[in-house]
Image 1: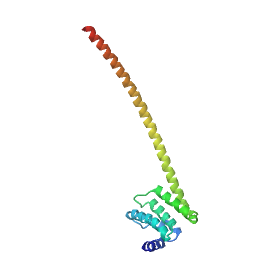
Image 2: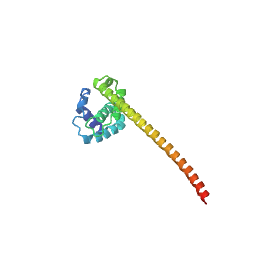
Image 3: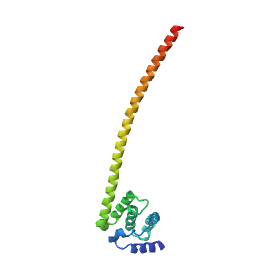
Length: 162
């Protein structure tokens, strides 16, 4: 019951849906982690108490993507905003929600491309190293063969002097 009252007070203090950006503007960085944990806990217990879970997902998305959050997590924010859109069709038409959703998807796509291009260049570098090392191994094997031949020739000469 206390949780329900607290959530109602918090949701009233956050204002209407048009003030998404103002919701956590006064939250200090140290509070983000505990607020995220509290909201995740309320998702688990909230469905039993009739709390609007969609709004909690929106709040989580905003917390995870906030520039003040010391552990910003755009992937998690994207997951939360997608859950919100799935649960709240009216909110899905909101300009700010669509803007945030598009930005988070773009960030994720950009990170994937950046990671992919970095891996491709790293792979090319490693292939060059493999080629170089393969060449060195070939040279060393040829040197070993020559040394074996010299050893055989030296052994023959040593036997011929005895």
